[in-house]
Image (cartoon, rainbow, N blue to C red; front, top):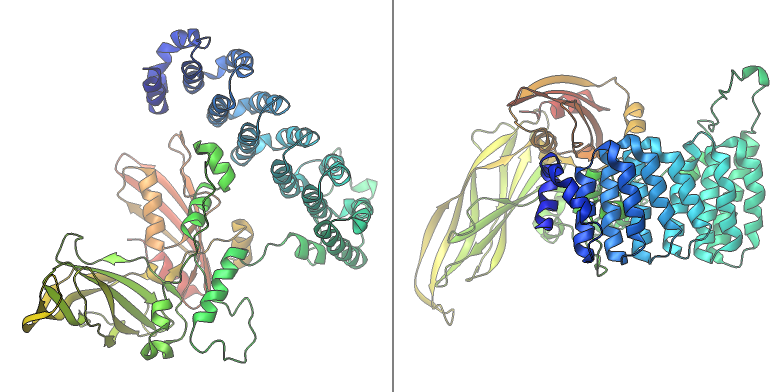
Length: 608
């Protein structure tokens, strides 16, 4: 019954709050499962004024229970802090106290990940939380947690009001820890030096001591950092601001010069992750004729690689995998084997007749053109090229006494001014239970602006009657036609979902010269549905975790940041403000930027 109450409290905490007095009596129950559920339910239903009292009761309880119950309570405390952000100091301080207590790796990891995810969600907690994590790594026995915290310090520490306060904690790890932690500490110190010119001289002295480290990784990181920082300090020597420039306690910003080489080399992220670089290189190698080309392989010459489902989930929540695990409460029991992402266009490259089309820009997800229970199951994958679209039709035969020969899909292009059917490739011998592919090639008229196009489709094939057990031919052959659902080629099919590491910086870099502004009224009852629809209309990737609508927004506007790459390699950025209007509609204000005003207009017109 208390488990049911805990589940109800997720959606209706006010209703369950009437039972709080009875739930508090269960905190001391001898059954630890009941006691844990009572505490987690109270944390969901309690008011802001009751938090301090609850923490006192939990403090004694946590010392007596196993780690698995402690982890459940930690997750509930994290969600409570998101509900009442003003209590972040109390809650983060409470969590950090238990970092110093006895506990296993999973328990300590749940606390660290909870604190990190709270930093992302409640920026006001950053400095106090970082100091708590600094104190934890002074006596941390887990290498993975130490390196995770050091990476976080290198990312967020230089942006705080007093970056020097973290240097001592980081350098202690260089002196006292194992090789993996020493290497992470060197990287963190490097980021501080690259971000804060005033600290470079002192940090350079510390880094030079790691040039003789016994570990190759630590020594190499230190050597690169020292050489890069020395070059930057010669080109842009730091000059302390005169005392006359200091107004009150406000100091001039300690930031590197825009042309500073250290900031560029040590802070700027790679154009793509190593995983995406690997996938892009494999796609490059699969493309016909590229390996025989004398042109050099550069990042700009590599194919555009879209984010995987894991990447989409990460950017949708704005959290890393570890932080998302802490938020959702699903600790993986077994390490999953990384699945290789196959290039959908590989089937196209294997067909000699299509080799002259060049490299595919992107491939869409399969679209069903029949129901899954019908006698012939057909799906279509759209492969986008620079001036063509190749439609790959996957045809499955579910009739045991038939074999399908000369299978094609006929498209009616009479109503389209943009696309013309220029060829087709049939497939033969689709036996019962088999799936094979036929193709249709559409040529695109580049002089006409892209708009959604619809095509009437019909499956055409020769039916060969066969024995259902042996597969041998038994009867006559005859031609057959089978109607399919209409196929749409949308403008969003020409947009690759590619996130940018820093949306604000990219938005300002593109500028507003080719910006298009629009306003729309859309019929949606929920903000979440409107956000999902806008992403679907544009075919773009949400950035900065803006795909997720904050709970208890109270009718406030939701800002959606999106990025993508349009066919031809044009980067497109978009900002959308979505506001609920009444109960059945939303108002959408959208701004689209790219380096081509025509592309900006095409993307803005995707809203319908």
